[in-house]
Length: 317
Image 1 (cartoon, one colour):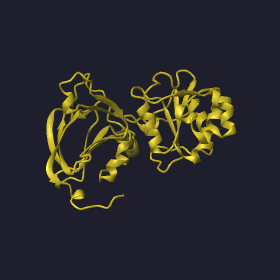
Image 2 (cartoon, rainbow, N blue to C red; image 1 turned 60 degrees about the vertical axis):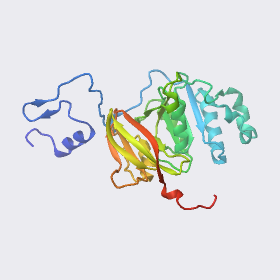
Image 3 (cartoon, rainbow, N blue to C red; image 1 turned 90 degrees about the vertical axis):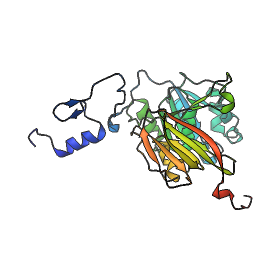
Image 4 (cartoon, helix red, strand yellow; image 1 turned 120 degrees about the vertical axis):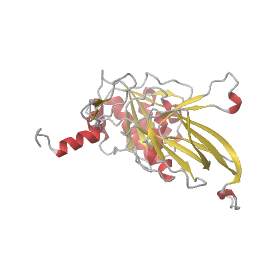
């Protein structure tokens, strides 16, 4: 090539991010404006940086799992004695009867800080999060922080491991690397879910407002009838879905309920939202992907068609 660049270099750059100055032929350009806020970065270049050494760590373990107890005690003991960190745990952990009989836990129990979900605010108190369990443990950690989420390090000690890449065998080395700032980051987007119920539209009660990491599901619940869901994208009606429901997922959630319903998996670095019908009544609607940042609105109501699942008697489980 005349410019000295190889095909590999050009291809890699174009896959990881758009050209800094988009061009369309010799004359066409995109006018820059304040609304252009999305920048796609090479995932391999995202590194964790501490402005000051982290002092507090929240350790979340999988509940009612005996196999997690000993790794939990080892980790907490090491963080307190070797790293001199302030360790937060849930109040329910302190009340765990299995841990109460652990002699090693008894030596460090008084040094732990506790909180209760839904009652104590952890905002601006936690520098770092460590999860011991499966994907559900990490999802719970995200739910605890409805504003900024501290860096999360998830160890695979559960049944699934899509979101838990770390193994516990050499946890000292791996945690030390993260605390010293030698770690890559995977940035994951969340959905802001605002629920407005019909009987609350005229009341002064504020609507439910949540940030969710995986997905938002609109379904028929216990009703024996199909649900009819009108889908709006940035205020424009897109389609009406007749079926058991609808899944709106982040790239993180694309590997969960959405893929089980027939959708594709999306890499977490792709800025997108996936909309997947649950058992649609017709062939007119298949999973679709829309850009991240759009506003999706759903109006749901029931139609008088029994769902195929409930047309036949089923034995009690």
